[in-house]
Length: 312
Ligand SMILES: Cc1cc2nc3c(=O)[nH]c(=O)nc-3n(C[C@H](O)[C@H](O)[C@H](O)COP(=O)(O)O)c2cc1C
Image 1 (tube, helix red, strand yellow):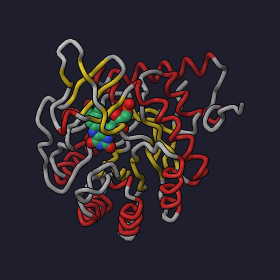
Image 2 (cartoon, rainbow, N blue to C red; image 1 turned 90 degrees about the vertical axis):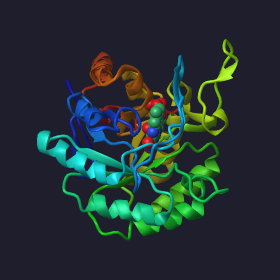
Image 3 (spheres, rainbow, N blue to C red; image 1 turned 120 degrees about the horizontal axis):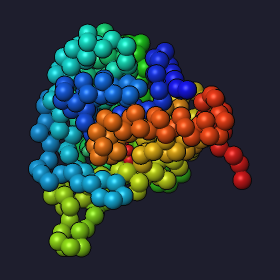
Image 4 (cartoon, helix red, strand yellow; image 1 turned 135 degrees about the vertical axis):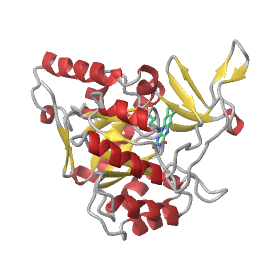
């Protein structure tokens, strides 16, 4: 039994797809995603101009997950428009989502306009975990800047679903502040969570950090972050209700992890670290594990799971 899903007017054959970042930067990587059991293709966060990103080493895997400081390396949005055209012509029936980053509001507007007007792109995910003004926090932690940015983004004409990739919030007051901003606009979905920022992993053998950039501090994914992701999915559902679809992301590496994210009120889920570790074969394995787990519990529909976390 397979479980399909919907994001606004876009159909997904399964509930699992890739998150923006790991293995979705080049055309070859995107084609591999098309040929896999990923339910959609989400491309690497792209900016107006190409970026080389931070110096190596900038990504490391450890037993419990990964740490990275890639620095938003990407080919620039014009390349992703070309990639979307090529992918749609070869594989017309999987949704294509872009991920947009910018370093000022004008960057976001330029990219939202370009992708809203492109016939090959189905969904716009806007990455709010990016640097804004020097000495100010990333956009999603700067509530005034987020509100202003959303007002500009939703002034751009277009009919495609728009959602926001959010960093984790650790204080319920902050979660509520962001939810109140989201409620002001016709937001279709949010993706919770982006990596947990500014963390340090030390290798006791070599007595050194694992990555070089930014005082060796990096962004954490994998097992480490699953409870944080689940808490954010659950809190945003509580604050936003069913008007905004929630996409769970963080610490998913098995079918049971998918099940937990759905229980916490996610409708679709994305894979990051596990995709980097195992490559695209992880989709088939995780879809199969999820289906087996559902059968074991005698569940035949996603409605028996999503939003069904039991009260204590
Ligand atoms: C190497 C790497 C690069 C990433 N780059 C991006 C990115 O460009 N845009 C984005 O929204 N998230 C990015 N992320 C964050 C992931 O999409 C995901 O939110 C995070 O890793 C948590 O999921 P996980 O526990 O499955 O890894 C990146 C993560 C990794 C590991």
